[in-house]
Image (cartoon, rainbow, N blue to C red; front, side):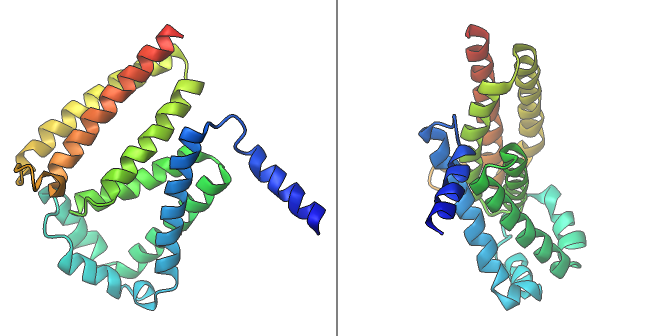
Length: 210
């Protein structure tokens, strides 16, 4: 039994070979966060009935971005049970994939997709911070695996995306005061898109130097 446990632990650690602690820590933080959320929903009966999701729509989407409201009104609200199942399944899948380091970029993309929806719905915390942490892991993997030509294309694409995001969301900003800016989903998304674009350009610069 002890030998089997040692073999299992060795195989698990092999999955993280070459991953520095500065990347391992945020990846495991995200994994535990997603697993916690998924397990919390999985054991909550009100979640599977869709009641918890409907309460969320009624009380926590006050600052939802205007152009996202039709999605909440005509997709999420009429289908609370299906939405609850999808969200819970994604949360658990992302958590497991990140813990096991299996297709981590796919897991990070799925997690970022959920975080983006939460922010658009008006819930900035903790999704904005999850996105920044995921960005750290993605950029490290990009620096290790992406060619110079590909990094240049990604840098240009993120710059364009940041510009489009800023133009689309600027009219929806409503809380510019320093004490409230962190709760403004439009401003947070604009800032994150600009930050992502700048970080991607810096990663491209580092790849070019190497």
